[in-house]
Image (cartoon, rainbow, N blue to C red):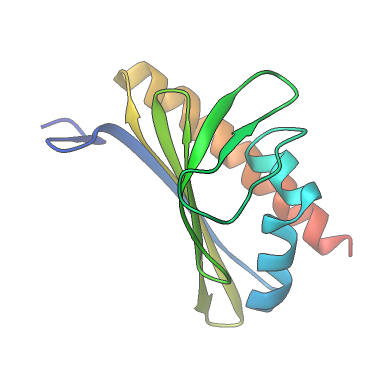
Length: 129
């Protein structure tokens, strides 16, 4: 089976990085308005309960599939599912973006580039605080 293709969720991609910030700081940012705009889309507001809908300013819609404070957020985004997860890691916090149910290897590579850009923006925003 090709890299990134699974039997259960189709094509998927994950990007992670250890950020030199305490977990509560990363969580507050990633779950707040500025962080949500970076990884989910401008205008996104999440209600932390399963099934709650959201809509971005660009018209992307989805719903909350899971929300565990200081741990992870899982949402649908169109036909895919996105999860952002945090864990303590060495001298900071491991931040991971994972997306599954992608349509093809090409979409997987596009989303890999997207999540790397998002990670860079999140790291820069946190470093600038």
